[in-house]
Length: 91
Image 1 (cartoon, helix red, strand yellow):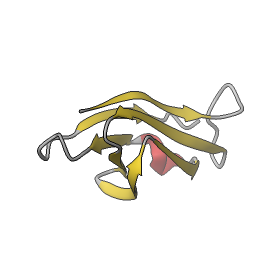
Image 2 (cartoon, rainbow, N blue to C red):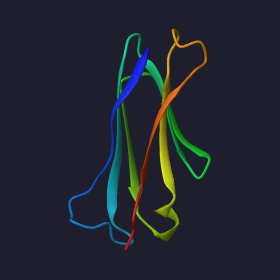
Image 3 (tube, rainbow, N blue to C red):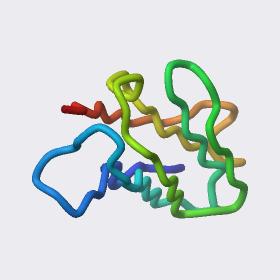
């Protein structure tokens, strides 16, 4: 099975400003390793195999105000996936 233990936007500021750089970080606790996918507005941004961590760099903009979704699955989950979401509030 797999559990998403952390899904956050990391930024070196108190607010997310237009054109600021940040990282989306998704951590998965699983055995065996998971396939981790990151989506924004139903578009696949990144998929990695056999992993516990996904890191994706983003330049924040007005279009990033929608949700980002991290999902994870592995070979013992019979096609089911766990997911977590984070919403950015770009100023």
